[in-house]
Image 1 (cartoon, rainbow, N blue to C red):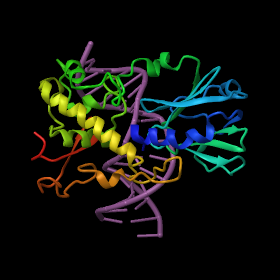
Image 2 (image 1 turned 90 degrees about the vertical axis):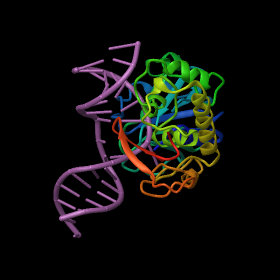
Image 3 (image 1 turned 45 degrees about the vertical axis):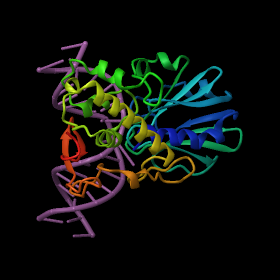
Amino acid sequence: MPELPEVETSRRGIEPWIVDRTIVDVVVRDRRLRWPVARGTESRLRGQRIDSVARRAKYLLINTASGTALMHLGMTGSVFIVERGTPAGVHDHIDVELDSGKALRFRDPRRFGSFFFSQRPYEHPLLARLGPEPLGEAFDGEYLWTASRGRRVSVKQFIMNAQVVVGVGNIYASESLFQAGINPKRAAGRIARRRYDALAGSIRDVLARAIEAGGTTLRDFYGGDGEPGYFKQELEVYDREDEHCRRCDTLITAIVQGQRTTYYCKRCQT
DNA sequence: ACTTTAGCCTGTCGGC
DNA sequence: TGCCGACAGGCTAAAG
């Protein structure tokens, strides 16, 4: 489900409900996530006041004075606010209960998500080697071009690599490459500097527009306010196999790269 | 150092 | 209608 725009939409949705609230308890109903939820996570959070909620890559960081609770939504995870005491569904694995009478609920049917506590989150092995934020200062065409020299992987797989740049998942990789006019099969190391300028700009633009639209809801994504994401309506190629390219009318092609489906226009993307 | 693959899970959908 | 395989928005670890 969630790529960067969906995680950012979730962050904005929960922020007003949890910042400056105190955690009165944490209830973990199922510890079997991507990595088992460590024993003691609950006690480290209990009694802490939430100072802020941030996002790094696709991680949500709930910051307190004593450390940070990190959540990753994996493929099917979501977070939302409920009244404390709201009966939990089968996939509602964690509740962070607040002194306001509300709770932050973590739901994840496939359990590819994760939840852990860290005093130095940015030094945690899972975060330490992440690439730059695509909407940040350090990300531009020069960076991508330099990082791609000598790389033989396809450009699609290259921009989905979180050590290169974070937050670009399967939907937005296809969309960014379409907007930049680049064939997703092209080897990353054989793309000119100027084309990487275009690609970096497209990644920024696509992600920013998707955040504005509240993310992309293909089936079951809802932001913190319960609204679906409306970026689906703006998708140019993703999930549009055999439909007409809006720019040139050619039928959109679907291929598989690295076990993920890629969509592109053979005529617009070279 | 890079690239590729297997695998973690459940739910849904299309074809028979 | 039911069964079965294919597929799904992510990511790591291990193997090559």
